[in-house]
Length: 344
Figure 1: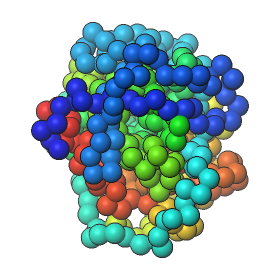
Figure 2 (figure 1 turned 60 degrees about the vertical axis):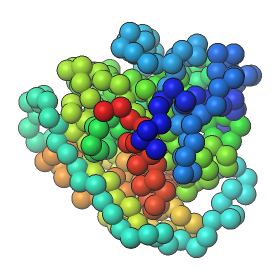
Figure 3 (figure 1 turned 180 degrees about the vertical axis):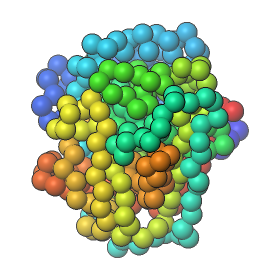
């Protein structure tokens, strides 16, 4: 798959999923004409689309990427609506087999940044430099946000989040003006900003909205304070798949119910399997924490751990628990897919 070019990637015409409290102005009435005649690139159960501006232009160079960062003024970032948790299509989970790993356990180790540092000493638990806030525009121009984190890879360009933070799911569309701000806090951008060059998710998320497939990875353009790759700038978490359903994790994100989504918060606890290929943990973070990583072996002294899931959904937000997809061979497939089409 590494021989495929990103020129073959584009978004399909799909509909906006439910978002609690979001203004009716954000409801989509149709795909922009500039996107209507193109097809996304699909392989091995994964789907990818070139990242685009709201008016449909492919983000293929530094000039267009700068237009995206210029679009995201402090005022627009502050007014972006925190995206709700994923909502699965009715019956989408009914065909999921009994929960179990579908292959041997595997892992990718975390990596430290290769470029400078910000002079940080003794990082606070809820402020990993490899976790940040994501901003994007909806098909009709509304602004929204999620959480995300960098993940180590050879090409050092990958940012992991939930599938519903890159694509709306069944009947929906890809988001646009997609930007990642590592360790965002109250309007500050200590490492600068990074703009996506492509968005990737599981085809089953796009087609059925399956909770077990609510995984997303963005490939990032160079950017930030050094004009460099995102993992070179802030480092990257590791990744684990096919581990136990019951593991101790630290979940990090930007919940709207805690601090208004303006700073990182965390929960810690042991996960369990609520059914299907999912895991659950106790945590009262709500909207805005979508896509935030669940980290095994989080090291407070370095700000890195191993991503074991991402925040996906909670049927009763704020009731003290939420769910994420169990990371099995599907996340490894998506990771390999994104790394394979990523530029060097």
